[in-house]
Length: 548
Image (cartoon, rainbow, N blue to C red; front, side, top):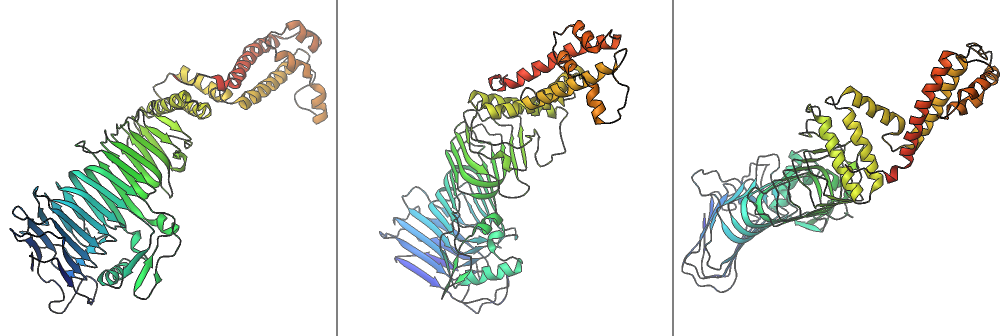
């Protein structure tokens, strides 16, 4: 079927019939478009007013494509609207798919899809001003897609879209995606009936749970705005419409994936705000102003990212198997504020420069990994712990330089623990690091040094008493009181003094000392001096220089 735009202000086509069964639509004659719809324009037409073509409650069983060539046209605007329509895939391989030819003639061309079901829709090498998809479904789990490639479109907008969207090499396009719990009034129509049938066939209670994926490559501006808090349960019936809301439980089940890549350096701005996203990928981004604010994201992947004009604010996960990965990236001069890394099940920073990033009010998990691919946590390189040490070192230096000494010390401790586990380190160095961890957690724990002092002091006391030529008691005691009577607590305090005199120990022992007593006296001087040093080192942890 061909629709030719002539000297008229509006062409309205309204077909309101229902179909018999899911994906096998049988309409009576002329109540659906049995042939491919071909939209074109006639040249040399002079129109001054806005012209609209409206398709309402139409079923396009063989799809459609646009052939709009306005090289010779003189009218100013064309507005093509599809509402409550079902649009099937164009099956003719010889057909030019959705080709919209629009030269620089000042034409204001807009295309709108309102409450439509799409099975396949592509725009290639097209040029027009604006396209909008409101509450549309691109059949999930059917291999369908909405795709734009090498187009010059000023604005691509989507509201509560379900399905797959691909945008590739649209260097002048701004993408606006919005998910909202505003009132969505769905009129009784082909769209309403089709979606209800689709939900039943997918064995799901709500269409929102289906996978939605956005692949945005080489675009100019990207704006993703998320939902607000829902108040009313989805599905409240009215006379001739259904009022839909997304509740907080609905938000957690949204399966939205967003992938943004900029290999051609077209990007000028990214704003992702208030979104509930299952998976977010940022790759090859080196320019533009990027802001990510107040989002709940379950999986974050940042790869080959070198954009210094980045702000990440108030990000946390919301589900199971949550991941946060930064790989082969540089975050110098980026601002990371109120990011709850600790809410993610696994966090990995691999070969990433973090030292000059600005951190504020962040939380980290018990371990930050250094995996080449966070999806394969068991595949670790031979120098894994060196990579992990470097990550902790950079984070500790960054936090220390910004005055966050408490968190810097925590990462400082983990830094040396990672180094201790490295196989490339000598046994002597690993022993030193083990002793530092055992004595005061690498200079961060006063309590551990205190317990070590008491434990070593008591051990030296017992050994010293039992090594005297005439011990005060033999091994084993009759009862606890006999054990207490045998202990001379004064010996403990003498051994605890690294500068003690042998004569003092002789006096307390009541006679001569054995060779073992002299040896224990020597050992106590060395050990207790080391313990005091570890205690003082831990006590001065807030004055410790953690940067290196």
